[in-house]
Structure formats: structure tokens, C-alpha cells
Length: 96
Image (cartoon, rainbow, N blue to C red):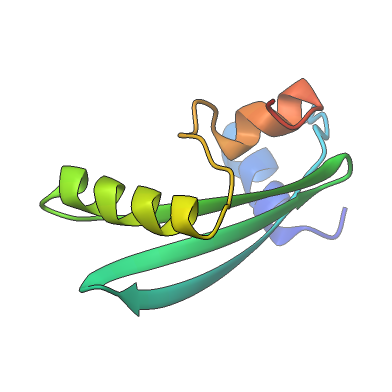
């Protein structure tokens, strides 16, 4: 095994039976737009790609309205996420 983290877990906790569940690649870009810091994730799975916009704000309703209006104006279909990246990986399919 070439992974130092797994070696440490095995040594420290006696865990030896790991099962690889797969993985995904996440690319994050950060933008400032309309006074908001937006984090745009492109997540690539073996079965497809998803895009997610994250925004930490004190006024989530304003951010939701601004982003929704922008995406609608540009005819970009969107929905609010209901699953984590790991849940999508485990399901093996991009949510409809």
C-alpha cells in the first residue's frame, strides 16, 4: 500500500479491511459577483459531471433571488441540491 494516510489509520486503529467505493474529481473556482463570494464546483464522476454553486452569506434569500434571476435570464436550468457529492457517487447516477 502506497498511501501514507491509510498506513497510519491501519497502524493507529487496527483497521485493515478497506473497500474502495470509487471517487470523483472536484474542480473549484471562486468568484466575487454582486457582492457575493461564489464557489463554483465542477464534479466529475465516472458516470457524468455535475456543477454546483455554493455561497456563504448572511442573506441567503437575497443570494438565492440574485442567482436564480441570473440563471433564468441566461436560460440555465438549475435546481437546489438534495444530495451530497458522496451520496451521488454511491448512487452511481446524476440526480434528475
